[in-house]
Figure (tube, helix red, strand yellow):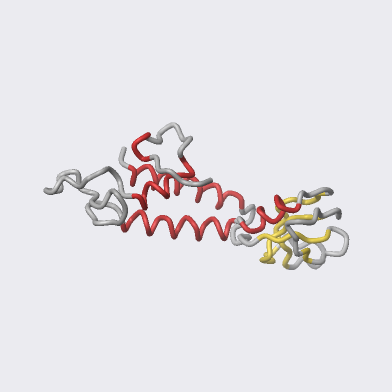
Length: 165
């Protein structure tokens, strides 16, 4: 398996999870809402939220007609009574809309780096048959994209790259 194939598979997996996280198609943007007042809560990452909250989609979608019916948000988490603020903020920042856009951007980068190309860094040429012998493995751009998947069983050690995490 090449690094490009590995990344294409990982991106597809992340994308599938993000699509599945939308209980209702189209409910891609999430926000925290006060469960008692229905007011949107702007989460401060340094202040724990001590309210009864629900995580809902920003988008309002058609619901079953229960005596008038209408459009309602999708309820991702119906009720949460104690939310650690950084985790709450992380959930809304990394909603399905963000993750799907992130996957699309990474897929464009991977597609641009598929095949022989010149790149920057110590591995300047992606072609092992390059005549001047400068091939040093996959380019650093692809290796950097693979960094979050380093613990995946199909990850190959020659794809590793040093990074401050």
